Image (cartoon, rainbow, N blue to C red; front, side, top):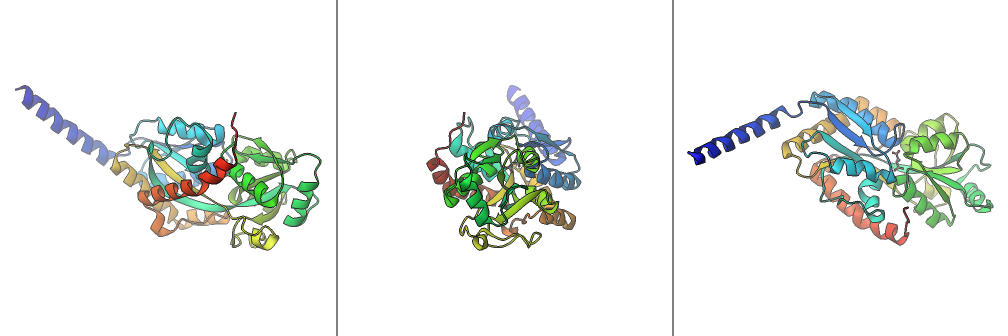
Length: 323
Ligand code: MLT
């Protein structure tokens, strides 16, 4: 008799599991953005969340959980229930670099399931408006002539803007003093106000301020110009050849999230990325859509592992200290 009850319970649990899988999602889904509102990660997450809700039939709520170069927000997502209702938004900094800088308390590969690769953009070297330089060469000369290291805004140690700053110091032979913020949204506010000297920023974050004439742009860290900003030279044209860095973003969920939930989230992200209005919004910010053959969860997983192999040696060699 006892066996029959257990067997019946097992069947009920299976049916229940299948039913919940079929009903997923049945309530709003949270996207944790590990940087403050108003920055490039926040902007991309909100644009995609707005369109993904059409595919999922449930609202996607963006929650900004900041600190420690984005690792606090990623940790919050890692420790969330693996039920498909919490997504970790992140990028090269949070889901690759942070693993080489912080004692995270979680593993960026084994404690997360990849969902989908998102758009990427090169970095852009920008300064406050009153720097008397009209080219990258003049800007580097200005940086070297300062009596103390110029101040570079970042989103914290390990953030994309911080990694890009380290790379810039290395290749240009300049010394910077990093000023950490909870995102490059607030860092940009201080750059526009002239409180800091520069940011090596995500292009998508800086372009609106460059177009408004509030900051100076010197070069794009890529071998080709950004289509929506054809007047900004590449680093190759501007005198820092080879300073190439592309910051890509992606979506993850906690490990052991049901496969059907991962598949539905991936399909919703891909549908959003194929939406002409979404593509126009993102491309106008200098963002490039991911290649169509890189849109599966497996492709993001393989990409993240390859980027860890590429970046960790340089980041560890930089011996970044985090308090
Ligand atoms: C970064 O520098 O890692 C990001 O651009 C920060 C942000 O998205 O606010």
